[in-house]
Each structure stands twice: as structure tokens, then as C-alpha cells.
Image (cartoon, rainbow, N blue to C red; front, side, top):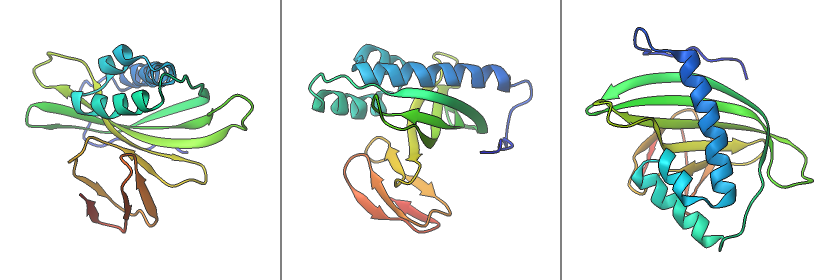
Length: 173
């Protein structure tokens, strides 16, 4: 996909450095999830999202996964400050293989990262939307998260097992 121009980027914000760190953390989180490493997952996620990811790891019963990221691109979409948090939206795209021997497939994910305005912590993954080529959009967000999806005209499978018909401008519960 073509790079997307970011909006609301504060003056002096190191976009290139931020995206380098975001790509590195993407890879670290993928490996931590594949290995079921809860300590690593905890380090890079908000408390709420960690609890959702932990449920997935426990449900796998300790089974390891292997996801090979073949190509990874990152675009900073937006940086905003709301109340006591800075928020950054990053679009990741590229190709990956979910199991050895599988054909690589394209993917696109938008990660929403949060960081305290006080500077008391680093950027943590709060929630994300993901789509592999030819599959529905999947959402991973803590229960109770209100999201507004625009210009999506397909059925969305929520990671928590719920399903919703999504039309442009509809808020998901």
C-alpha cells in the first residue's frame, strides 16, 4: 500500500524513529505471542488488552505458533492527545506466513498505541484491527471499547467471538 500522510503530528515528533521502534515492537509482540511469552506480551500492551491476549495464550494450552513475517511496512496515521494519554495510530502492512509451508499472504493492521502524557511509561498496544488478504477484518480490543469504523462494508468478526454487521458510520458496542 502507498504511504499515508499522517495528521496531527506534533512539531518535533521523530516520525522515522517512532516507526523504527513500532516495527521492532511489532516483531517482538509477534514472537512473544507465538511463544506464549506472557511477560513479553505484558511489557508491550495495556492492562486491558493484555488480559484478552492472555486468554488466547491460555486457551492454546501452551501450544507454540510460528508466524514468519516476510515483509513489514509501517505508516504513522495520526498522533493525538486525549486527557492523560497520547495516542498514535500505525498502519502495518506486508506479507506473512502463519504456519511453515503455508503460502505467504498479504496483511494489513492498524495498531492504536497509548502512552501517558506524564512520560511515566512507554508506548503500549491498546487495540488493533487486522485483515489478511481475502479474510474478514478481525478486531482485538478490551471488552467495552467503543470504536467507530468508517467506510467498512462487510461483516466483522470480533476477536472476543461476537459478530456484527458493520456499515459505514456505525458504532460497535
